[in-house]
Length: 287
Image (cartoon, rainbow, N blue to C red):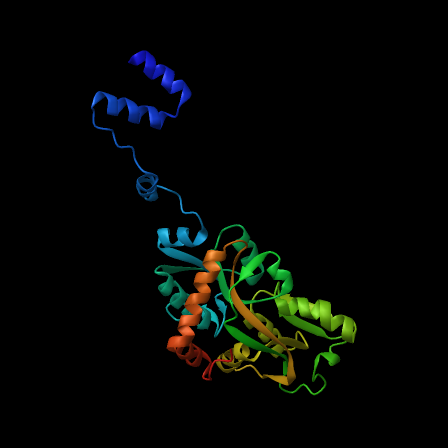
């Protein structure tokens, strides 16, 4: 029987031979693990296949933001990350079933940090642009920002970007507003000097004391800063543009983007998003 068994082994599959041999000898077949059983056995030890699974397995989502851009994101009196973006991030994390871990940094370094896996997502008023879509993916927009020209209260010469020629204009370093000044405004109105800043407060402080002639920023952002610091500055003219901000993640993380979009949609449906929006801006959501 052993000789025949060896011959059969060479000519038929191992499964068939074992079955024939066991039946012939009257032995009970030895059960082999099924593919499903193998899958269940390895499920606990298998590495997460995508970023969403990694986040759920770790129990946290790492979120990068500036922490200096009230009322969107800032450090409160307890030195805790607070603001509109922070509340949105906490609620999204809750709906993903994880905790949120905030890391603050200058805006100019946030995108690089995302690419280097320092963060899982950026929730820090990252404007959705075609250029940025080439290097990162975005959730659906969660806020619309109107950007205005901002000048000193006693300024009577600057009413719009058309008055920027030969002036010194402040703007956040690495922001979409900086790109707008360089790529759109300057070719349109003529040469002017651009001064870049790592935080909004410093740019508004310089505007208030006359170190720069104007800046551009969104109206939601400057209102609380003007009130808190008693800056004598004002927004003038009509909005020069409207931007849409979304949650930014590294490219090719479709599962995470879909989960974030689902969380945002649920927040809007059940009223949570409206509550957060009105808490920080005192108006109905604009998106």
